[in-house]
Length: 255
Length: 325
Image (cartoon, rainbow over all chains, first blue to last red; front, top):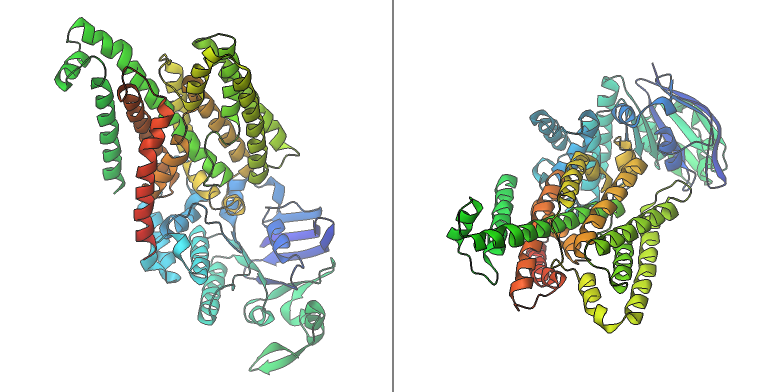
């Protein structure tokens, strides 16, 4: 099934276009990477796809239904978003934060049930924060917060995941382990992922497809094997790279 | 944990109310109080309790609860720990209205009415200016409110400077918050009940909003709509409180923080706790305000700060020790 389809999508930041005539279709089981240099508009594109920001032109369909026909609550049950950073003005506890993932499923008068707590604990166990339940979030390290945000997404369990630099703040083991888990679980329930990444090699590891953003509005989409090459990656980051064969994977290393 | 702490809040509220009812120029013992409330007692005590002290306690509770509730809402709305009910200028408008009425030699209901009018004008003014081209940035709202409040402040100073000496005392008392003129009516209590229920229904959305606009929107909250509801609700609650008792300071700023330190940031707990604690604080402060230097009455706003400042500083110190070992 088509989970997300963009048709002639045009988005911009102020007057600067970040993508023009972007067409792509995300199907269940796929993992898309958004690659581009700093300021190329990866986050803006992600927010636009999530329905949190209006596109300049073009259409976005979610499950073959136009984005603007979805209610906020419906959207929250269908797609989840991982943001780059969070506010700490009035810090909640770890448990309270994870439970917010259940919000789209509860009526306004309902409290979280015993089962919601169980789901939340399960997610905390998965990201190895189980014994930090009652800690306040402002006492957590950057990596712990990132894992907490991922746990909240696990609890929300949406079909379409939009992740903004999910590997930020995570150590090597957690990058591979958590992203692996997230991809596997999402794909198992017929879902799909779109993630912006800084690291081409992480994209090589996790993504089946990519969107390359060249910063001037030009974009290039397709299966990762057809799209990435020494040439395109060099052009993407405006810095020469060369390909290194690692087993049956190709890695890109800066010259 | 929450059940025990709420029980404690109810005990504090009850104790402050009993204290308020037995304190005053006519001594009434706790036993007599119970008797009087149950319909017995001598006629004098009957009259003192039912016609003087009980209405005043009820008004004090309502005002304190309204302010504390409005304080919580303003702090989430602006996502700013320094926010309080008066920050967006509602109270400034109310004060200007009340002072104009006092200058004109009016009293009682005319002063309240005039202050309500001022509050409504200020509320709509800030709403219209901050709404701008449809986006509701907290920072823009905050700045608009603060600047409008500063404008009211200048007008208030101007009114104080040109008003005759004999009305100055009444005006200053109004500005510091004063319950001695209050007449109990059911309307503020109804506003409080309706406001508390509405705010509680928004509880989970408020929890999300305090984490950030995008985070909340991603989890299904209509941010702009929620902000408008919060703004209007906060302004109505504040206007209702200020109309009755003038600008009692401190309650709306510190009670929410106090309850957050003690109970955490879940609004479904925080809101009712703040209502109880805010009400208790003002009942207690008002009792002291009218008894400490009796027969002279002090403005209640002075006492709320005298009680609240040390309690807050103590709790914050203790919490700092726990959170960062």
